[in-house]
Image (cartoon, rainbow, N blue to C red; front, side, top):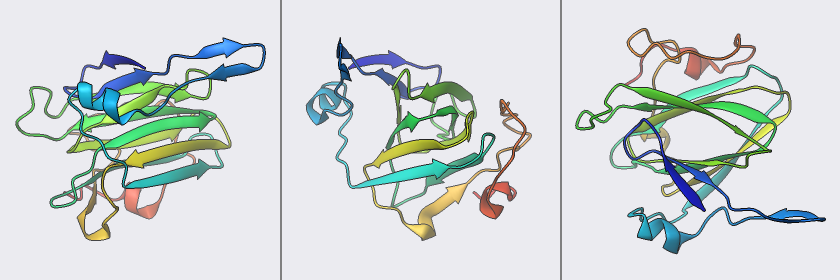
Length: 174
């Protein structure tokens, strides 16, 4: 696993080291000990899958508040997404900054998202599947979102939005 820093403090892009042969490849996508040695104490408490029918689908910007702060590992296993993280930690040197990267079934990259980072994505292909690994259970009372088009952050999405939930299209919910 190759860890790369991103422009957002503590957010990491993880590239699996593939062992390839004529059959395809094999790669480690999670190793608690390796994460621990990177000062990330990540214990999986919940996994989720997000299947998205249409190119242009937008999900986000989501996070969980106290006392259910959560860290995430996000990987696109089918199709392609434009993945966005937004730093909402007032103590961070990258407070109110956002970063995007493409996750897809070809690069197999994983995004590590620490607590108090809002997360969202937009699908770049039809029939896209995203896996989430969280260190905290989902708690609806602590579930928060920031509007995808909040002018304060000015996030640039890649495509016109073809599908979005009512919750995600609402105004700032902080």
